[in-house]
Length: 450
Image (cartoon, rainbow, N blue to C red):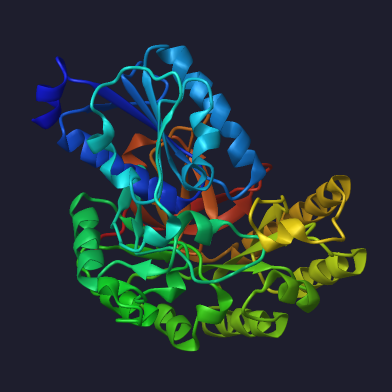
């Protein structure tokens, strides 16, 4: 193997991933490349010769965590070679290169060729940078991640052509581009052949799927065509749409999911604000009435569907009235849970230059209010599911003596640890909500076969 010739002995590599499901899928692809070159993969907390950190820059907190993770690697092996890839590495390569202990920083196009940059593993006084102009990130690299024995993240799209005023993703990942439909189906079949029961579709803006396929600017296929094709792949028990913009979630897609063989009744739909005034300043491509329509259509066709919502609090110009508009909008909406993000200024975004900055203590207070609303919404959704029969896919981790799993509509359940349940599907009746807010159940069938 190439790297057994380059180095005297077989080397060990470890990975740490920050951020989204898309990053996890790409880390897995990079890891498989290393393994193909003769490296042995180990856990990040073990001694390795190379530590690769896949970075995120969506929030300020993800930036700050990077230095902590580098120190963790150095503690395990002070002589180890440390490489940084990912969004933060593309946006601020020199800043990462200056962090003590970092030896190599690779940008958006270079990260998938990381082994080409490893001539030797000597520590550098200052990190070496290889980072393209983001305009050059115009080709597609397919990826999928197998996080455990039950679920895989399948990347179908990358980049974004939207210009939301708070977002750095287009600067970090480039233009919208898609995997070929044939390659998505090939990857899905590969995942299925490994005995994995659930695939989660991921990307930056997956509703834009088909744009940039085969390098074309136009849409070669639509997201609906992708969904229909995946539904016919043999051996896939569950397909889940991770997150999709409300303006790109069409009635036809909702209708297809409602009668699909494999797609589950769970949607995660970014909102960001319930105030039309704030949505306009954010340059979102919809207003609140369209969001209401999407939720209503899902609930009309799938009353038991779970709907998750992304929302940002403390955006510049968000007055108390705007925030309360968002709060009441969400409170009245038939949704299941919230992912709440406290706005943080990101360099080179239009929002960072805006006036009427919301004080951080006010942002924190608003975030707390919405997190409380999320708890209430999730509880109400779980209560609405009590007495119903659902199918649970059990996961592989023993958490304090319990095994957890998710129903098709994303109700999290628990039962005393039983290794025989791992990666199995069971029909259950949801019976009660416990003190942790999780649902207990009674088995209806021993196992569900397909």
